[in-house]
Image (cartoon, rainbow, N blue to C red; front, side):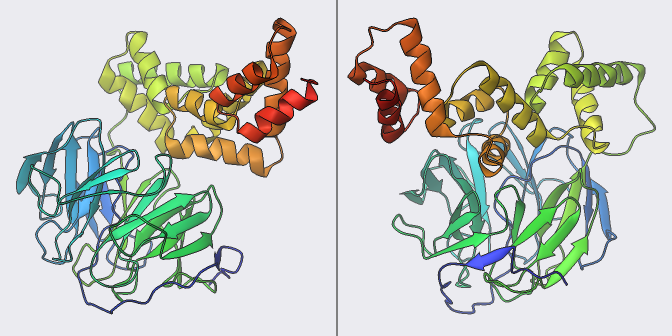
Length: 415
């Protein structure tokens, strides 16, 4: 076992709640990644005991217990249409249209009936439904900030899933579906860690797990101490799922990856070579690289294959691409944190990838946002000395610099 003292430090007491024996619940977020091959494990070992192909490589995927049988299975999303299956690899049992194709969607058992349903997130507003159908939301609430990373879990064991927000390495857990202050706050791991949610020991409470490469550090409580389980599973390039696949009330791991083939076609080999060339000369997000290949005449399926191939081979790290892109922007102009994040998002990087780049710069002392404000002020003032202090401060604030930093920059110019 690996000591968790440096990984997890609790800064507030976690509510205990009632030890209600509800079915183990999936972690709530979209699985992510791509591929139609799934390798699931019902125990803590390095080998999958359930392998199957399901859906399309490009499907958006969720896990949940859709019928209350205590077992998690998959749902695929294509635009605003959702296909729910009640068995692993089986045909869809329920098909619904829900929300908008652009919505961010979460999964949880919001009312404690043992069945997972959907919730739409739009910014900091959540529209929660307690049934798998269209229609009006059961609950609407505002929580956290629009930029927060959100987790779903049953933190107190009352059988109902609620929300938690992650800001860097700090987590704010709520035990009710309402606004207001968090029920508990912890510092956990590193800001760049990939984190999973699950009930790993069947105590009806969800806790967190750190993923680093293909090694998982599982804890059964939200506090410091030693990891309960340390397990290597799959490949570092896999997308990970967490769920209770066999109904034993314990969440375990699974991975999603592109199905193995006999080898790329000639068109796919050309697309792979082109993708490698582009990544040699400039940083790209995943979506931008696919778009670039398609712009050059590559078919969409071959472009997707090429990028997935590089991911599977470990030849591309999108977090590193986001960081390289951040360096590129900072070499040419002075930027606020908010504006740099916006540029990265416009380039197609995900929220977590953009946050990785910003946090890396901050943690390694490579950026001082106040000095960026000063540099931006100089750029404006050197080009046009007629700026008044109020005008310059307003311009900097409009670009995302905090008011204090904008005023500090004006002070440095003697305005």
